[in-house]
Length: 105
Image 1 (cartoon, rainbow, N blue to C red):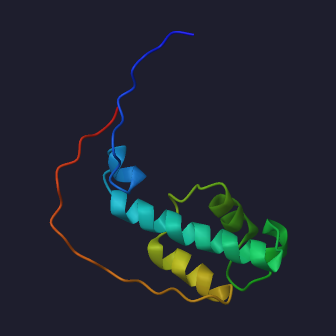
Image 2: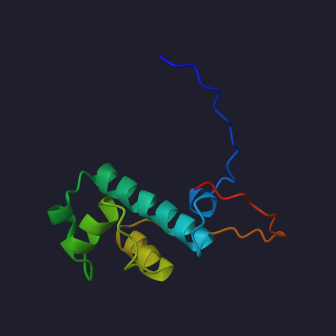
């Protein structure tokens, strides 16, 4: 095995920002909300089909969330789904000056 030196780069804490996504903060927030939805489904032992009985939520939506296909969802829609699963969302916002980030390609 060839020995190579690897460069270690500290991330920003937001993988979407590190990868250069245009709406990195929104993408990160949507991923966090999706993870909470998945936790709620797992906690209740609900499959995608079992969860579709909730009013206004299609099985396809749960399938997309489980597969991290979040492009069709808004933050509001994800929060609404969490509420319909019997959980509540508390959001704390901290605004600070953005620092330049090197993008890894």
